[in-house]
Image 1 (cartoon, one colour):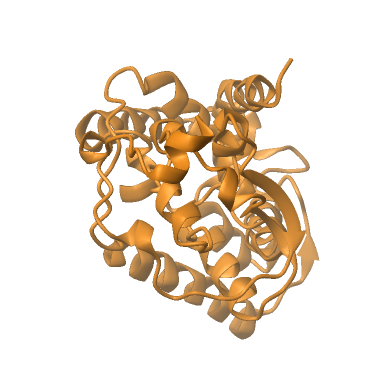
Image 2: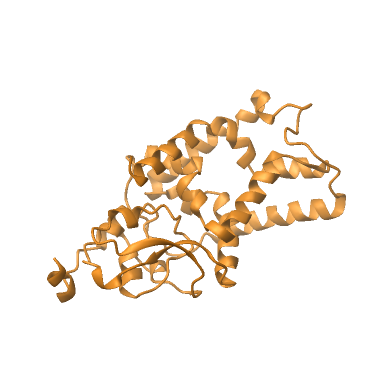
Amino acid sequence: MNRQTLRKLILLISFSIFPISVIYLAPAPPIMSLKEGVVNLSVIVLTSLFLSGFLFRRAFCGWLCPGAGCQLVSESLNDRAIERKMNNWFRVIIVSVWAIMMAATVFIGGVSRIDLGYPGTGRFATSEIRYFLPYIPVVIFMFVFVLLFGRRGFCYRGCWIYPIVAASTYVGRRLRMPSLHVAIRDREACLDCTKCNQNCPMSIDVLAVVQEDSTFPNNCVQCGTCIDTCPKNVLAYRFASEPFQAVHPSNAKCLLTNLQPRTLDRGANNK
């Protein structure tokens, strides 16, 4: 079993248990729990996701997220690459307000105990049917976002987890903390075949990153698809720090429909 097959299998398993895990990824339960002075499993999960960004960047989104599994299933509806013109600041503001509310709730009321299964008397939250209800509209939204916007449309336009992991990823990169990331291994071996662009689930202009000897943007989910589809092993995983770059070529227009294989002299000679 190759790496991408394993990754997709993990995502599908994660999506299959989403009716249970949705309560621990939803934004409301942590506020409800902390209001009562209780740290429950949802608080721990979301805090862990934030902290994971410092070491693994957005690897959760590429390898473990049930939403990624759902969009993997729904990609046949619309596999068009997304043109990312700007950040979804409305979503960022909403999630920032939610994070401030969590911090304020802890600061004002404090924490009295840890109860992983709260709410409920010693039971996990999934023991009550009402906690399954968010699953249905969330899955519908994921399918609709993919249908309307294209590949990983929910990640770009609707996911509330994205700003949480992206925030710690940004801070970690800004501080130049060592972390897992896709890096250029051998730029001169690139054939300009655009296979990396065609297969990137996040519609990143990987070829531009390689040609400009740059770094990958925050929306890279460390899935390794570009690594595994490159015929010349131009890219590789690396755990290290790297120079911070605030502006990146992938923020420009990079619609897949506008991408054509380039036949530079270097690429023609390598072929």
